Length: 117
Image (cartoon, rainbow, N blue to C red; front, top):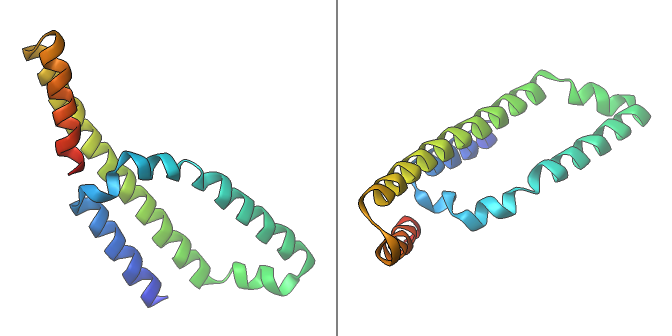
């Protein structure tokens, strides 16, 4: 469990410190994760109903520790994404307030390129 916690903590720190993990494509692909996790949890529930030993292991304190680390990681990612999005929106509003027409379109494209480079 220590290795799992260490890897998860490293990934959380990487997400907080790097824009690379906030790329739009990665967020687009991640939209399917809740469906996959729900399916996996449903299969574990059904297996636990058939095998009582599996249900006992699932309810062990170590399992709750892993779930807590996963919840912390997901919450941290959401905080980092919200922070980055708020900064992007603020910059976009500044561009809208100071520019008009075609010049604005060019600057928005440049802003998007700067964000992902």
